[in-house]
Length: 73
Image 1 (tube, rainbow, N blue to C red):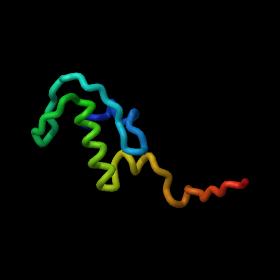
Image 2 (image 1 turned 90 degrees about the vertical axis):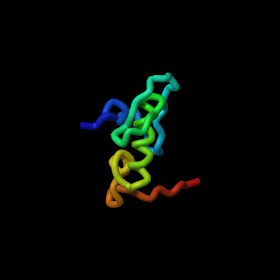
Image 3 (image 1 turned 120 degrees about the horizontal axis):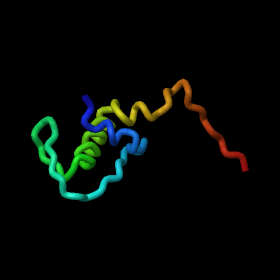
Image 4 (image 1 turned 45 degrees about the vertical axis):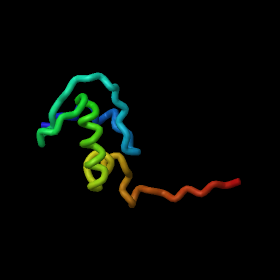
């Protein structure tokens, strides 16, 4: 089960998740404590993006679907 499923739709392709700073401590699977669940998930998503998989990868188009855009002046 994905503990962060409620935040995945808010995660931006640029690797950001906007979180509030309320104090509601939560521990991740490794036992590390975070200020709140959103901040815990933001860190999880950032690690996924750095590994080149997970959330960010799903938000990008495959190379075959990307097009080069040229600006005309």
